[in-house]
Image (cartoon, rainbow, N blue to C red; front, top):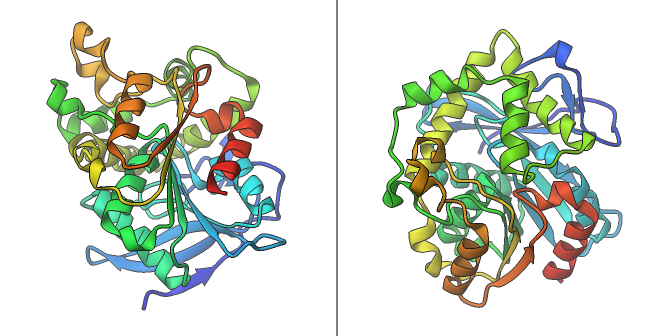
Amino acid sequence: MPALRFIGIAAALASVVAVPARADPMLADVSYGRPVQHFGFTSQSQTLDMAYLDVMPAKPNGRTAVLLHGKNFCAGTWDTTIRALSGAGYRVIAPDQIGFCKSSKPERYQYGLHTLAANTHDLLVRLKIEKPVIVGHSMGGMLAMRYALQYPADVSQLVLVNPLGLEDWRAKGVPNTTVDKLYAAELKTTRASIKAYQQSTYYAGQWRPDYDRWVDMLASMYAGQDGAIVAWNQALTSDMVFNQPVIHEIQRISVPTVLMIGEKDNTAIGKNRADPVLRATLGDYPRLARAAAARIGGARLIAYPEYGHSPQVTAPQRFNADLVRALE
């Protein structure tokens, strides 16, 4: 049985705080505002550590929500959603996946959505959590779909927030690339490049000062002397997302499903490699979300025409209220 270790990392804070001067690939410079706990386990003949938040409600309703972060996000990014769900009586588990944020970043690892799903399932088994609600955003939404397909009897509800993979980019003609080229590109990551990408892709060209903390969070991992290991793991997970589509299987999802979609999103992995004509057709979330909802039996779609890739960040009060109502 994998060992479970509980480590408090800082006094509880109201929000995530970044201090770029202490840049560290394990986000030692960032507090999630809650005690971070650690799940030690063995995968691919390696001893790994998965960091996670485990937030108990003051008035439990007997249910648990598991929040799966996106590729450019962390468990701490769910801050306001954790507060809303906990306030509604849910126990909330928010892990950092292997390769991300405060979790292990192995020098060698064969990344797969099915593997990340298995790691998460092992954590929930260790915590004796049965039939949680699985909420996934961005890459975490893609992972949530794989989790629901892999463990259908262990999921009570599925919520997909602007999930990646509602289209198969490779099948549509986006050229593939090597991990080496992805790694070379990741090594060029700066705070400015992170902000520019998020502004154009996540926030429909808009920006607010409160978005800066998420940029600082990511940039701090790349900025330190060990930033290359962050770049390497990001390259491997980019390859995973591009080459492991789930969209062809979503009609087999058998649990009650809600899609929460910011329709100004235009995320499409690898679109920078596509020719301009193809690029213009990718990441059409209004169309993709409706097509996906139609293929998942009984799925409900909550659309936000004015928001982009991260409605939970752009409009947390509205999003969290909608989420709590959808789970009821």
